[in-house]
Length: 401
Image (cartoon, rainbow, N blue to C red; front, side, top):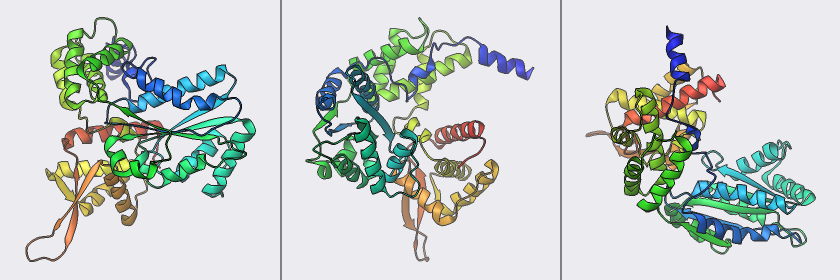
């Protein structure tokens, strides 16, 4: 009986033709409304296709969340590699999400070990940089390091760009393409990077007509014909226009499609869109959560469960740590010591995923203590997302780091 239910759900009809085309990591075959930015990127990086020598190019792509920064730079990277190959020029485009690789050392060691298959153990960052440059020079490869959410690197970003300026005989083999939100550019990156960049490309927010065009194209890739009408697409475009976040609308379409499958509804209705809208918060990037380390996800799970249990908007670090230890036992994970746990909390705060406020202990008592909160998102929604990630990692990996 149970197996038949599972098989029916797994193999039954779906509104989706290819649901992966709505996932954050998907790179579509076309990018509506970003043609001008792609042309500008191409002109700036044209120097890499010069057969007479290798030159470093440094470019920043800046914009609000959901304006297509990530998908545009990855789309451009694919096109750059293909155009170079047609001219017998070796260009390698390597993408790093700085939510996952948060230091220069992490990026360099991954680059050497995973991309060039050379062990990095025992070498300093400077030695690794020299090794990479020698490898690129020997094989005449022009490397483009794409650093998404680059502000998380802090001063390491300047150090990485400096690595691109280490030239031999007037040649430099490492270029950088950085992406960041406009607020992070204004607050942390604009001054230190001035004079180091060849260009800064701004990604303007999409208007409703542009969003309609994007969602129409994505719907045709993702859903079977007739599942999503123009009326529904316009409804989603109107929702996303309020936040000026294309990712917001794409996630609404995805969740509405999943609900349509569960409820066996064809085509997708306005009510399903309204329901999906209540589950999507533009402040909460699902791809950021998926990029967190195992211990960070475990700490988030502890925080959400503790907030639910206390029915409160904030709680203490001590309470979360007790809950965290229980979750580690549940999943068979070695727990962090309290000082390391506090560092993980600080990392999540710096990423803007949780908040930490300091308040007085109480009347007649001295001292202050920190309390942890979530962003302005229902704890039930956060808990559901985090629990899903935990279960997926347990089933896929069998264990955690």
